[in-house]
Length: 454
Image (cartoon, rainbow, N blue to C red; front, side, top):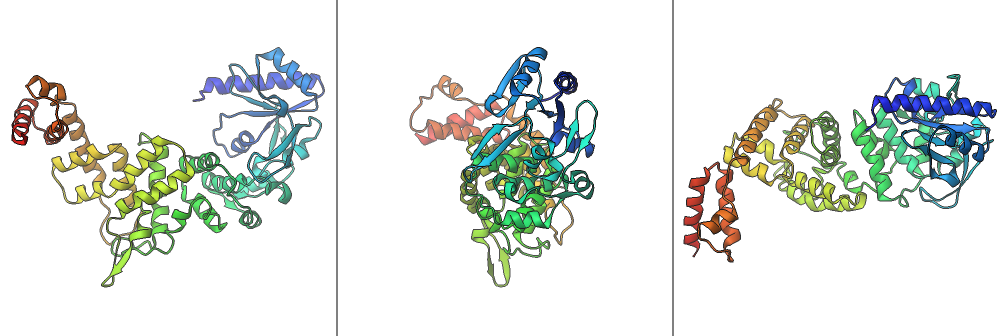
């Protein structure tokens, strides 16, 4: 986490570096997202500066004079200073030597000039530069106008296609800022294959869209328009044209519902414990409908889609992530996403809601996923008020689970010996706990149950 003190320190050291660079007849610029977000009046504590017009050895000398230099990519002219979060770089040239995100020959060229330095960036809005000492904005490619007009536009046809990750970045920026991707950029992206990208890069751009955009659905709609769902998101694409029962889903097909759910889920990101897992769950929660939706007697239904969706979601997760935590969380959420609203709509017993929460990897997040699922549809019925009911039931669950309960040690102390039935006996004790049975009574009932088993 970057605090205001870190931000102020980084601004201070940037100006100090710039003053020393100017003594060597060089110039220092804020670059990239920092300039873009400042013009958009958005907060961005990630400060990047670029040093022009002096040799790398002179730049290193300056950095050593103001702090402890850390070489992040010395051969690429990239540095940090100990105690600061600022990124310091020198202009460089890149030549593609392959089709992957990292397949480039890179070499430092401090005298390349601001035009050529900016030209190597992806979009006009990211090519803006600001002189650290004079505050002059350098805008070679119309980035200020594109910011004003809300447009994501690539800079150069030749260099843009060299990095396939830029396709995802275009969609991600469109979602984050609510911008429109220029038609010529969309058309260019359509011809760029994404299969050589790593899952880590895909997950990174996906998470930025899911966690930073007010409407993350724009990310997927942009990829859909580019015809770029096949390589990494085929399960999501498969939801297009999957019909739903209009009684419950007047919004249309499963794709439309899913996009609505993703945007609804974004409103709950600050309430959940695992935002990334929560948002990914919103993406995949109805994957099962693509494999089990059918029409019987003119009625469309998707029975057991929450269970059928687990295998489909697992296939998707294995493609985009290596995180065991993310996979465990999301698969559990997929399987259980229908349960909260069923419990609430039926006004089921506390015992039933306790069993549901007990099976959930994160009950509170599950409640909010169910809320997003309910909000992400247009139904004949009135909007539900299930969230308040479920949160109150969750408080009951937590209170019950904090009470004393029967443990394995209690059973051994009561004279039971661990044998083949012991696990089954502990499961019985756990059921009594979920039912809210007081420990003394639960212990008696469990011992009686154990005797019956023998």
